Length: 120
Image (cartoon, rainbow, N blue to C red; front, side, top):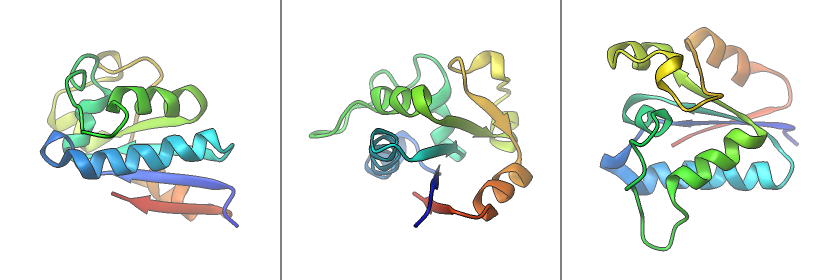
């Protein structure tokens, strides 16, 4: 059984249900005591920018920002370096605790023994 879960979310408000599915899985894993690393790419990067996701609400789902904060409180949250660069974002522009890392770091994480990776 995997001891660590890496969740990569590739969609933002244009596909809110996909975004929420990834966030929900990551938050539930954290609540279950699983070590979680959440990666945001593409339009999902907006979730890491303070205030950007405040109005994102999907019926019958927890708010995206609450799920993000639950993951960040007990896991790690990473923004894709190229995605951040395309949006002129630095770590100073992001929610405290969010880091920016590149593809090599993602590959290293998902290839580690005992890790399960999911992409939404």
